[in-house]
Structures are given as structure tokens and as C-alpha cells.
Image 1 (cartoon, rainbow, N blue to C red):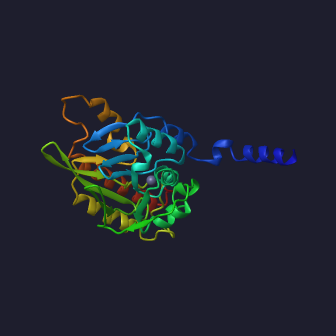
Image 2: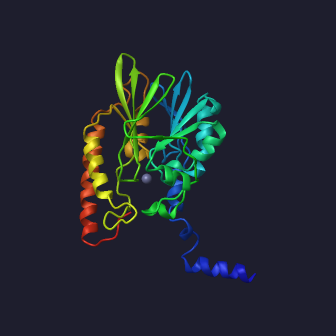
Image 3: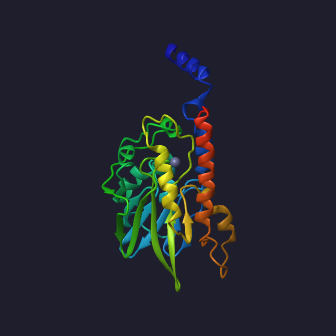
Length: 290
Ligand SMILES: [Zn+2]
């Protein structure tokens, strides 16, 4: 009873139950159900409304990229099955970056499918511990997951005629990884990008002892992304690639709204401007803006 009273006092002192998880409300919004859908070619969306997971199918098994939130696992699995695919045919798991909202379901997906996880060297310790040491996500651990294969920048992962290439676009996390693949869409050859993220999102840019080279990492990633092309730009949050708006425009016979070669350069230009503004704020002594 005394312990119970103490717990109540602690909860009140800390500002209520929400204080336990600073993302509690956001997680509910991100994890709203999303009907799975065909994006283009052999790519399907199987994530929640606000956090992405993509299924890439091949005749020799499938690839899932990103694990959304820990609480998204059942939805991702149900979405894969609803499209008519078997969980046991998922052979490879990939990750954009080791934040709880994109790696959360990987451990469960790995267990339920038997797939192998491929990830970058710099994000591997974060995936395996479930904990990142800086930024707002330091207060929201993920579910630890064992990485089976470490992929270097420029490294590839292949299955059933599909090859994904890893491009380390460090900054948002140390090993943030943008994956690309080529796609045949009718007679057209298309470049697909599963973008990592390049937002500051509350990361300390000044005096970050856990990631001292963070500013140079962001700069190098902006430079790298400016050399890249994507006909289809897909990202870890639907809001980053206009998912809902594009989905509403999907009509039989109409051009696929997910094809937009101008989207990547527009996105990167805006993100770099935001980065410069946030760096200037933090250099002037302001705390990181979430
Ligand atoms: Zn993130």
C-alpha cells in the first residue's frame, strides 16, 4: 500500500503517466492502422499510417525494409498476409535507422519469419542494445535485435533477382542507411529509394560527446544525396513522402503518383535549409528543437 502511494506520488510529481514515455501520444498517431497497398512493381506498403514498412517480393522470397514501432509488429504481419504473401517467405530484413519507431518490430519479425537482418556497422550496436545514447530517442528504447550481416557503404543485398544497395547517409543516426534498387515498370527502368532520414529531430549538434562528428556527417550526407537520383522516393514516415496524398491519387489508368523524380532534390534542399537554421540556433545557445 505504501509502495502504491509512493508510486502515485511519483507519477504526480513527474506530471502524470505521459511523462514515462515522451512519445506516448505520437506513437498512437503513428501506429494508426493502414490498409496495405501496392506501390509499384514488386513493392508494397505494409506499415502503419505514420511509420513505414515496405515489402519487396521476389520469386525466391521477400524483403521487408523497416520495422516501424514495437507495437506495429502485429499490423505489419497482418498486412503482409492480407496481400496474400506468407511470413515464412520473408528472407531478409533491412532497416533505415536504429530509432525505436523504425526498428521496433524487427526482433518480432525476425522471430516470426526466420529472416536475416542486414544493417550498417554504425547502427548495429544501437539495434543490438535497443538504445541510442543521444537525441530524444534516448528516452524511448527499441526492442534489441541481433544483426546477422553488417553492410558497408556501397554494399549490396540480393534476393531473387532484386539487388538493394546501401548508402550510408549518417547524421540522423550514426549509421543511417538509404537503400536503393532498380525496378522495371512496364518498359521503363525506374530508380527506387528507401530514404533513411536527414532531419535533426532534436539531435544535439553542438557538444555532442556521443557523436562528435555529427555536423560533418550531416554535411557529407547532404552532399551524397545531391548526387543521387530517385524516380520513386519512399521514406520511414508517410508524411515525408506524401503517402496519403499520393495514395488518394492512385487510379487505374492514371500515372502512378509515386513516380516523381523531382521529389528527392526538393526534399534534400528543404532539409538542408532546416539543418542550417537549427545549427545556427544551437550555436547561439538554444537547446535542440524537437
Ligand atoms: Zn529517426
